[in-house]
Image 1 (cartoon, rainbow, N blue to C red):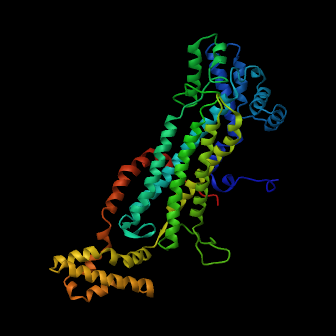
Image 2: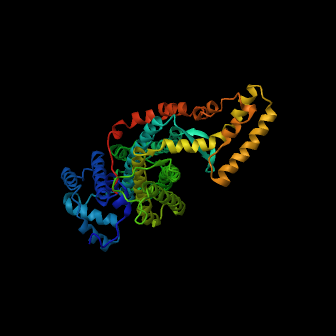
Length: 476
C-alpha cells in the first residue's frame, strides 16, 4: 500500500522531519489529550473535587497511548472528530471518562492545539531563517570587494559587489525574521472560553465565581507557554490570526523566490552557480547541463506558499457571527501546507547559499565589457583636469562610444572604446587604465556589507547561536 496511495511531496521530498512531526496526527491528538488533562487539573485545583487524583493519573498515563483505529470507528459513527477522541481517551482512562472535556467546546482542543502547533512551527521557521541569513552573511563578507555588474531592468547598470548583492538578499530575510518573531511574541492563546466565547459553561461549573473562571483561563495558557489569552473570542479565535501568520510565511516565500530567481539568472550568465554534486545529472538528454534545480524547487515551493496567503483571508472573511464550520476543511490544508512548504524553501535556500560557486573571471569579463561606457564621465573629467576642452572631449567620447557599441552589437566584437580614445591626442595625458579600475565604481558597497553584518546579522547570530550549531540536510 505504501506506493499505491498519494503522499504529499511536501513531506516526502521537502519539509524536515521536525516540521512534519509538528503537523502529524499523533502530535495533534497528543496535544488534545494534554489540553484535556490540563483543563481537568486546573478545574480540580480551583475546587471541582469530583475530578479525582486517579482520573488525572489515568489521563496522564494515556497521553500518548492513542488508539487511532478506535478513533476512526467512533468518528464514522458520530461524524465528529473531537467527540470520537473524547470517547477513545475515556476508554484509555476510564476513571476520567465522565469529566473529560468538562465545560469545554470542541475548539478548546482544536483551536488551542492549532495555536501551539503554529507557534512551534514559527519557531522552527525562525531558526531556518537565521541559518539562511547566517550563510548569506559569510558569503557576503567573503565577496564584499569583488566588483560585479549591477542590473536594473536586467540591463547593465552601475557596478556593485557580489557581497553587497548577497547582503540585499539577507536584508529581505532579516525583515521576514523580524515579522515572524513579532508573530511569535504576540500570539495569544484561546484558552477556556466555552461554546460561543462567553465562558458561561465555566461560570456555571464554578457557581458564578468570575475570578475562578479568569484564573482557569490564565493558568492553562501559562502552562502551555502563552503569556496572554484572547479576551474576546467567538467559538473560535479570530481566523484573522491564521491570515496574519500565513501572510508572514508568504513574505518569507517572496524573499526566497527573489533570491533564488536572482541566482538562476546569474547561473544563466555563468557568473554564479548553486552546488552541483559529482554524480548529479543536469538533463536526461543534454549531458553537459548544470541546471539550477535546487533554486527552481525553492521558487516553485515559494509560489505555492504565496498562493496560500489568500485562503486564510477568505476564511476569515467568511466566518458567520460566532463561527461557521467551513473554516475546518480549508485550515486542515492551507495551514500545514504553508508551514511545510516554507520549511522546504528555507532548507533549500540555506543549502544553496552554503555551496554557492562564484566565477570571478566571468564576472570580471562582464564588468570590463560594460565599464568603458560607464566610465565615460570619469574619463571626460580626467581629460578636462588635464587641460582639455570639455565640449570637444564630450563629442569625441560620444562618437567613439557609438562606434564601439556598434562593434559590440553588430559585429559581436569586444568593446574597443578605450583603444579608440587612446588614439586621440586629446586624451594622451589621461591614464585610461587607472580610470577603469572597477573598485573605483563600487562606492561604499564593501563598507555597507561590513556594516550590515555588524548591525543586522550579528545580533541574529547571537539570538540563534544554539540553532546555528545544528545541521539539516536536504531529503532529495
